[in-house]
Amino acid sequence: MIKKILIANRGEIAVRIIRACAEAGITSVAIYADADRHALHVKKADEAHNIGPESIAGYLNAHRIVNLAVATGCDALHPGYGFLSENPLLAEICQQRQIRFIGPDADVIRRMGNKVEARRAMQAAGIPVVPGSDGNLGSLEEAVALAGNIGYPVMLKATSGGGGRGIRRCNNETELRRYYDRVLSEATKAFGSADIFLEKCIDRPRHIEVQILADRHGNTVHLFERDCSIQRRHQKLIEIAPSPQINEQQRQWLGTMAVRAARAVTYENAGTVEFLLDADGSFYFMEMNTRIQVEHTITENITGIDIVREQIRIASGLPLSYAQHEISLRGYAMELRINAEDPKNDFLPSFGRITRYFAPGGPGVRTDAAIYTGYEIPPYYDSMCAKLTVWALTWPELLNRASRALQDTGVYGVRTTIPYYLELLKVPAFRAGDFDTGFVEDHPELVRYTTSRPTRELTAALAAAVSAHLGL
Image (cartoon, rainbow, N blue to C red):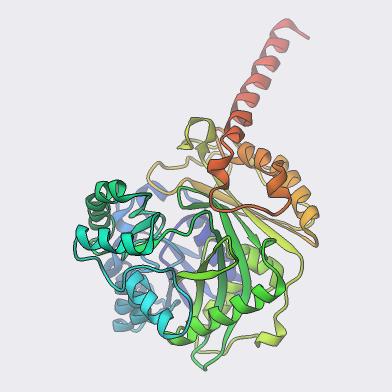
């Protein structure tokens, strides 16, 4: 078994991995930039090592990180998500230095990171893909001709893209001509590659993804699906498992397709196969994420399986702990990403000091956080500061529990998305389990109804000050 793991990440996912290490009796090693000196993952790990003054560059330096893993006597490295988690270079360097990479093989990461290669692999496996270009686009005129054949709207996408970047919807030829060079530029700047491709735009789809686990002994299982349709600008806000929008027959088909996709590329470790569900009930493969996902918590809640523990076991060469027939789902779970953003100001980041924080509790409530009272959220990273995960036996109970848990959560000193979620949970369509990826844009009134918690806290503080001054 693995004895010591370097965690090549920060924030709540680093804390999550540290906890899994502690339960398994594995020594955890954290890394941090100067801006993260007081971060929670630094305090929780068995060891913590500074990677330099650069806020982001240090977390992206694969050679430096693996050298540190060797120097500290680690026999494995967990990349978490983001940063280097889907960079094949990190997996390759780990292999060269005899450090076990807790994730898939570098070749698989490379193939699935290339959206065109991923489409081809899925087509060969008999998995439906969105109609589009057979490979990378060679010119604007090629894109115009193809769009004319498959019909508008279409999507221009960076071949090496991810995280909602390098994507443009084009409703007509004029927009396609306008955005073509812009997507090329975004792809080059964000991913170091000018390769882009074109797909038919599935209008108002549901975004459904399937969690898979695979070991080196030929065992591959799925852990059912997650509904990630509640998103803003291609960034997920709320995730639900299982999806309240599909039936059991669709659920079984999705699981079968996800396992087939993993086997088609000889996948090993944890991964996610993502699909789009069209209005006519058709599913299309979208992409495969070769890492653990932010929203893995809801899958853990409905199955009882510790996905990070399984990742470590797989990397240790052990078989999966469960066969497919032993995995069942129970109830519903929802994850709400608590972002340090101001919904009333176009969701602009709201970094600063956490003046007061307390986590919710009670049955079926889980919090994965990277914050604490007095912690100052640095302005250099993603705005997510905590994840609230709730579970209940039924969908109506889940909605009520989510609302209660949000009201129990206290994050003061910065503005967060908590008040926005409280309003979203009241929308009849959402409560009926009827929503798609356009839901947030369809409900701009939610921002108008949102009340800022920091403002209420300030009002209470002023009232207390006035009372004290008057001797009341």
